[in-house]
Amino acid sequence: MTATGPAPFFDEAFLRRLEQLELASRRLTAGRMKGERRSVRRGQSVEFADYRNYAAGDDLRQLDWNAYARLEKLFVKLFVEEEDVTVHVLVDASRSMDYGEPNKLDAARRAAAALAYLGLASMDRVSVAFLGDGRADGLRPLRGKRRTLELFRFLSEPRGERLTGLAAAARDYVSRIRGSGPLILISDLMDPGYLDALRDLASTRSQLSVLHLLAPDELDPEVPADARLVDNETGQGIEVSGDDDLVERYRARLAEWQAEIGSFVARRGGAYVVVRSDHDLADLLFDVLRRRRVVS
Image 1: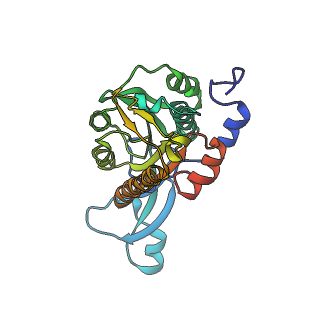
Image 2: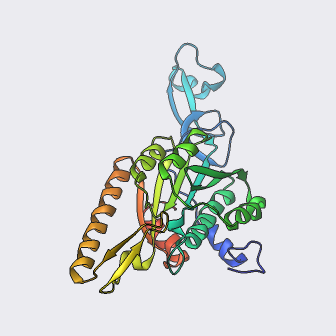
């Protein structure tokens, strides 16, 4: 972070690097106004796409009279229509995210700031929200790089959420969603309703990407011989006896859990990426998320 740059997250040099990327939206749909991203929807833009045979009722202004002069057949010109895209970035702000070294919530804020900035730099509409306590606390949609400071200030604000309520929070966001495009959830998914939340988010016309953010010691734990594990959100604890067998069973269950989520998201056409909170952000953006086609 820098205190001298244009925002509390990144300096000017990193922002310029970010502008080399854009969010990949594989499920493109048309918006209500023309933006800078284009889909193959047939409309009345300036870029020619193809022809089709004339049918009664077609707009006569779209007839290709040169083709008629050569072939004595009527063809309608088809065009690529420019599309308005909304980028949705959702950050789990529950107590379980305020954990680890590096802190998971801090890592989530930085990743969200970078991904949302890609949308602003592309002149897409950007909607950002924190999920916690069963609700979505969102910033009104923004557009354009001039809104960068507003975006970053929102993402920097202290959070008071404790419980996730991920399913209810996702449902709250989906009920108010406006516009389709990339939808990115950054969460540790440590909530009983995580599959319901993913199902609701995938039910929108947006392209879902899930960044499953975990701290290094959640991925590779060291458990002392006698330990008390405490749930960060509920405060409930359990006594355990740490040994190699316990750690191996934990790793096996973690792998099963990740596989379950990955399969669930893939069946709904989304991308699932496991992210360590200590993962270098530049490497995550320019390598990992590129390979997973979350960005391009």
